[in-house]
Length: 280
Image (cartoon, rainbow, N blue to C red; front, side):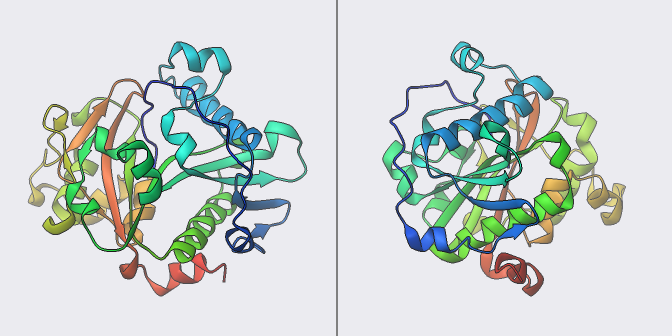
């Protein structure tokens, strides 16, 4: 799930990953010359941030802060309290090794910084009040030559290993449509609202000052099949996992996107995807 960038702030150095049990949890998650694991050093986090910068700001024409432009990295204060999932191309060196990334943040990280990133766009108090561990997914991107099923499968398997390791009950975050005109994506927004609205007990609600209505078309104005086909691939992936969306969309002018908040209850994930999570 791609999230918008906050103002860049200085970060504390990241210690090398010391949780050997978590490192072992990614053992064997590989495909040919590609492997997936968590970042272990500042340099690896910086490589992920440079990939994010290339994709979000150079390719997708988002608007960087002066600090980001000067360093060629997409970064914010949440990076220092999150884990960074990396797809690594072992035939390459340096920053080029990182060809895919996801930012993962649990309650522990949110407590350190005072909130989850998603709360900048959505009221998520009901979700935060739920029982068990929750996981915010964000800043997902893949280098252009690697946008294929093999890499996406590795990312899902990596997320799955993390979910199993920490017994995650809910995953959530903001997924983006690459435009800022809600009428241009009226069909997928309406489909998601009418067919996949989150249960009220955990439903995120777009912050009032940013909320854009999603039910732009009546439910009987289109077929469910046409609506699903119109949804972006990443959002389709979450829907296939049994995902829901929050009430209302949000326009993000910095990233030139329209965001929806997606929630996945891991207990509803099908056996097919649980097998993927376990690397089977």
